Length: 299
Image (cartoon, rainbow, N blue to C red):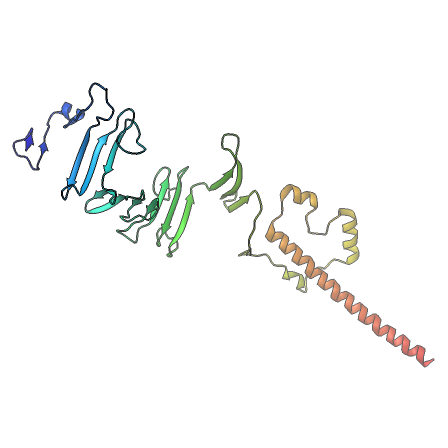
């Protein structure tokens, strides 16, 4: 049947060439014009297989509708068959799916979680959620990308979770309106170096530093080892070891783990050299005592 056309192309074909009609809508369904019964909602029902599959499209009233947890004055889609869900199909592919359990899938027609994002139709593309200006790695302010990659943008070829914030990340605790506390921050410092700031404790089974600072230069022949008397005078005057920051400096500027580990190793290696020197003196004194004891016995 055709309305506004003499050549209908479907069971019901409504055609309007007027701009005014197009703005208002080509089809108008109105119920409850006197606003006396909110149960009189406009509903379009689609059925198949003798009513086995049925879906409604409608508008709820001011005080609710005929479905659970309804929102007043809202447009809704309803699948009346509890064993089925709803899908948005683009081309011949189901791009968005809402199943009967409330699981929502984007790119996945069988979601198994409350929200599942998966590019089922092209395994070479990334599965991503983007918050911000656009969906590219263009470093726009406020951009947050949560994505899994398969060798895109020069990144790892292995499947892994990538978090990308244009200017870093801040994880906060406390009440936002009363002033939250930054628990952890990942950003770049003034020199452009990646920096992780943590306001709290770190509990780990192991911490590995990929580029450690060593102190084996202590054992080089040209290393200038201080005399112990010089070290003694320095400690008396400054109350800390040479090269080691003072307690006040540590409190004000903090301590670099790699640098402090290098300093501690340096001092241990210096102690080893001092011990070797003392051992040689002890052995020399022992030899001297033996020689003196031998002369005493000969007298």
